[in-house]
Image 1 (tube, one colour):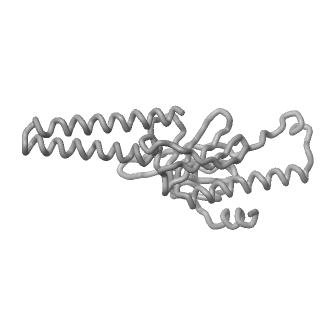
Image 2 (cartoon, one colour; image 1 turned 60 degrees about the horizontal axis):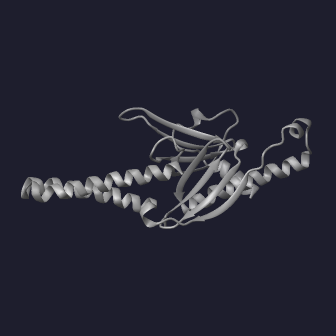
Image 3 (tube, one colour; image 1 turned 30 degrees about the vertical axis):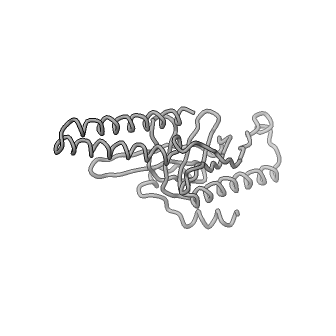
Length: 217
């Protein structure tokens, strides 16, 4: 695994524009598209999930038509928990929960990328533990011991209605009903189209409410 980390470091450049946001001595080990949710907003941000030798980052940058930068991160040396979560009704994506004791971040990406990221994080922790054991314990470390990171896998069972797939289908279905309702109002009259518009609006509001409830958990 140490050799795998070394090879990954040499082959990954990271997304466009990331280099100018890296800290001194920081290098990219892994990068993959996914979703970043830090609980501050009621939706996940589509971005690149980046692992460096210092941080885990959510990064997104575009220059056209307007410049926009999204950058959020957790320091690896402060991580206290890394959890690989396999949720029911999510055949394509897997979720990683990362926590530094104060903040929680949920990362969603494909199963292959999630497995890779989890393995790299775990391998890095093992290398640090072996290095610390070989060097012995310094006076500073004895007074302020480094908190170990807990790694675990968990299968999360949720009802279809509260799953990401269920919420997405409910939201998209609501929008489709509203569009059909508007077309029916124009062609067949308000008595036929209005109920569809109302049903669509209820579906969209319900999807947003369930999504908000999941974010607060």
